[in-house]
Length: 365
Image (cartoon, rainbow, N blue to C red; front, side, top):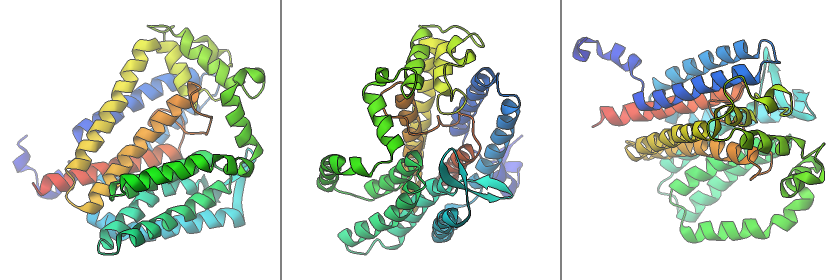
C-alpha cells in the first residue's frame, strides 16, 4: 500500500522505529525462550511474562505516539509524583524480603522504578528551560534534584535501583555540558569517599562487596550464587549444552535464575556463540539509541534520548558484570530479558520515548 494514501493521523499512529523495534523484539523473544527453560520449576511464571511483555509493548507503542513537547510539559509533574510516591512508601509501603519498596494500589507497584524515567525527564526539562542560568548554578540545582530521589531510594534500602536512578540523572548532567575537569574532580571525590562510605552501608551491602572479593570464603552461603553462576557460564563452552539441557539452572544451583541471573542460564544453554549474539543485539540497540540522540531536534529531546540510551547500556553492562563476578550483586535485571513486570514496563516506556524522539526529528527533516 502506498504510504502517501494513508491518512496523516493513521500514519502517525502506525509509526514505530523499525531498527529499534527489531532489536527489542529479538531480545524479548530470546528472553522468553530462556525463561521457558529457567522457570521450568515456577508454574505460571512464563505465562505471566507473556502478559508483562504484552503490557510493555503497549506502553512502548503509546509512548512512541506522545510528542516530546508533551513530555516536556509533563516532566515536572511526573517528577513530583515520583517523589511523593517514594515518600508514601514510608507511610504505607509493603515490605518484601526485608525491604520496604512497594505500594499496594490495587497491585503492588515500585515507585523507585518510575524515577528511572522521571529523573532524566526532569533534568532534561530543567536544562532546557533554564539554559540562560549561570553554569555552576544549573549544575548545583540539577545535583539537588538528583540527590532527593536517590537518597529516598537508598533508605528503602535499594542500592541497585538507587544506582540506576543516579546514573540516569548523571547522564543528563554529563550530556548537558559537564566539563572534564568537573568530571575528574567528581571521580576523585568518589574514590576518596569510599572508606568513609563503608560504615554507612547496610550489613547485606558490605557482605556483597566482600563476597565479590572472595566468593570462596563462604561457598555454601553468600558466595554460592556467584560461584554457581560462574560454573554455569563456563560450562556452556563454545556452543552451549542446548536449550532445556542446562544442568546448573535445572538442578537449582542458581537461585535467581529467571530474574537477575537469567544470563547464567542463557550462557550455559547457548554458550559463547549465543553470548556473542546477545552482546551484538545490545550493541545494536545502543548504537540505534545514540543515532536517535544525535539526530534529536531539540536540547530536551537530545538529553532525554541520550540518557535513556545510556540507561539501557547500564542495565546490560551491570547485570552481565554482576553475574560474571566482576561487580557486586545489586539486583539489576538484564534489559528486555529478565522476568519482571515493573522494570520491563519502565524499559518499554523508555524505548517508546526514543521512538517519539526519532519521529520528531524525522518530521522536521
